[in-house]
Length: 194
Image (cartoon, rainbow, N blue to C red; front, side, top):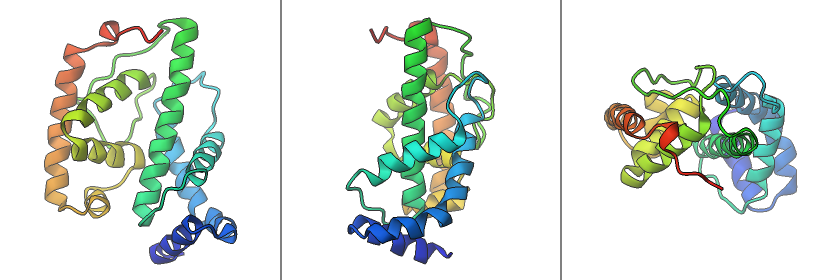
């Protein structure tokens, strides 16, 4: 199915067409699962949530909102963000239960397009992204689209309505900013959430 057809189905779903969901799922499921696998690639191996369950939970969250999706890229970005929030919430629950555990510090010096580092501390990553988003909202969106959704510079540029060169500048700035932030604010410096 082409992107315009998926966009049309997303718009129909947003307009309350219940039949649109059953038509949409077969066309987006594989890509949603690939996004879930990317998100979970950096998770501890003992994580209980599976990619399929993550896809389903994220899809339920998206469909349960009144959010309108203007494009295929917008839908997948929203799905990726929902998955990230689910995993962060799960990591918070685990940390609250075990207070610490085997979390590894995240560094952004070698940040690539996929979170493939085993033991990635999602709480640290979430705190860093939240701080970065407060100072550079579009840059944070670039990180989410490139790192979690897996979009290329060109695809991220299209989704954000900016040039690929702007995405590259935002990406480079984000990597430097996040690296500096992580050096200054480690897991040991995080405020206790209880």
